[in-house]
Length: 130
Length: 130
DNA sequence: GTTGACCTTCCAGCTTGTGGAACGCTTATC
DNA sequence: GATAAGCGTTCCACAAGCTGGAAGGTCAAC
Image 1 (cartoon, each protein chain N blue to C red):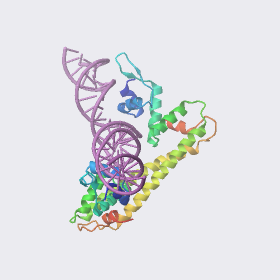
Image 2: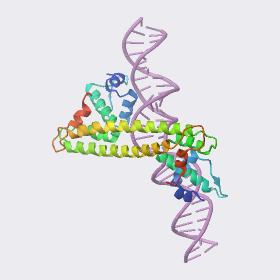
Image 3: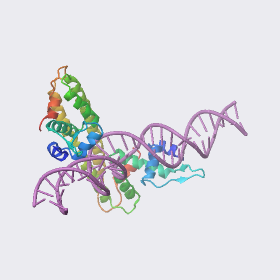
Image 4: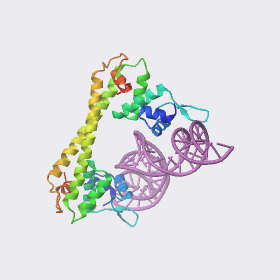
């Protein structure tokens, strides 16, 4: 398989596949005599794994660790679970942070007329002390 | 006021103030004969405004627009409100996205023993089709 | 005059790709 | 055999929003 084909089978763009290779997330691909990268079904599986993990918000570094664990037949599932739970905690913190922002923003906007007059509690809120 | 003092009064670091100046978010500061930047109380207010807006998740571009509106005595509050509501919508989308991630992650981790055995539904889930 | 705390500029790096230029390879068609 | 479309290649630059650090100038106190 050429890079384009593996890209369409894995939902990872050719550009991104090359990028992943450049940062060492995936091993350098075999090459044809003319320099084209070639891939097999196993590579597609790996890229799908990466795609799923990235979609769940794991960092590229985390994905590298998950890939190592995935390939390690002697792994302890506790190790994977710990990684996942740490990530969940980070996602939760992020959600909370965003919800606080949202609440404050809603509060400010609810007090703003939103007409053609200039007085605006949103700007006042941003300018104010708290 | 030197940059350090204005930094401590505004909760924006000296480094970041220089950065904001470099990207044009704030006007170039006046300088002393020896080249030190000097600031007044108005600059502190502006930096506080920026700090609050950034804390609410507004992009630097949005902050630039908000600053323009803040300084425009003839603004329509509707304009500000529209900006804020668009931002709230973006925050809501982000929260939803994170909650979906979280739900999937929780689902995967709940099925994982988390012991010293290798079988792991988390890795299976990442590898799987869906 | 010397120390230490400040200030200056500039360059590099963080993260995760994406866009584009310039050029080579493959395959089909004329 | 020539040519064109559609692949592939590399490399450089940019995105956001800072932060760290190096090398050096300034200011106030002792």
